[in-house]
Length: 518
Figure (cartoon, rainbow, N blue to C red):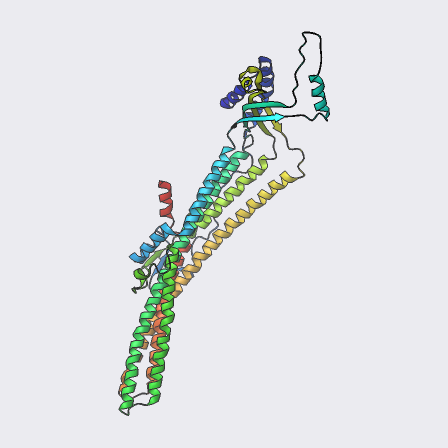
């Protein structure tokens, strides 16, 4: 308060004692009014309470053998480490550093922080320096121009010096223009609050983009390893089928078989071989997708990833925590909370516009017809005093703006509740998918084992002449189909775990710690 009064006093001190006294008499009540009535109008933001169930359903947590989801506090900071695959860890680290979507999100944070500075600047006085030169001429065809001309031609008695009114005339001017609008009702503070909340939104949106990126890298990598595994299965079965084809030809030559067996065996080899290009194309597409996520040219990772490797296995246990943990961990919920905060602050900005505003303007400078005269006291001009603006009639615009901001605040609150509910469903569905896929995989493992035994038995009986080739052919088809299904299930299980980790919202904490350390 003392500093503000000193600012006003320094402006007033340029005038004469009488003028200064009058201006002080006018300004003192106004300044006191500012500091006696200063407040921050509008609602204060209250952190919303996430409406979540006490725990996950029994269906989501039900697992018969295999990897188990347990409701204990998860450590999802670097969830990809649970797969124990160094290549996956390396890809995610490089993508986090180079991905172009993340760089865009980082620039949006910078933009938001600059908006904070712009909002905060409204609280401070502004001072501008100026200098100008003008040549001015009044039209003599106007009343003002005629008057100046008549006064300039006045003749008087000897010794009388008539005033000089040249037309045209020069005008030089230098000076300063200072202005300040105190934040009487907190509208500027609410603007700063909204800008800070928007920055938090941008930060959490970057975290959300990072979580999505990590999930996309892991998904593409698991899909790549799955395609490589299916290609290896196809090639292994193709080798077996070619051996069977050779066997049918040998039996035909020995008059133990027939052309139908040879044709069926040859057709099976052709069908299996036709699956190779499709799988090779899927492998190339996955490598290119990973290259895109790492901001590299197509094929840049070909040399690094072309050698086949196993699908990253799931860990024995997956801690998932409780539904209430999501509000703290998921960036999309944190971003929704920040948007609600910004909307609440904007209500205060709108409410502040209903109240009077006070501004102080203090132009000061010198004006003269000739430049040397700018240094004289006679050339000095100044103006000081407060301006009070009171909204009287705005056609309902100001009140409508308040109602609009209140409606947007309610919308943000609904969006927060919707985001929380969606997050709970995401995790619940991911848990169910992860649990049921394990049961599916266990059944497929047993089926593959039985089909292999059936194939071995059919091949042995065919060699011994105890069965037809159709039994061998059916067994080969069943083995290939179930092996590919098992490979798909293994891939789906790891992909489901990635989706679960993504739904839990982890993977951004390291980035947040690094940003805080800068």
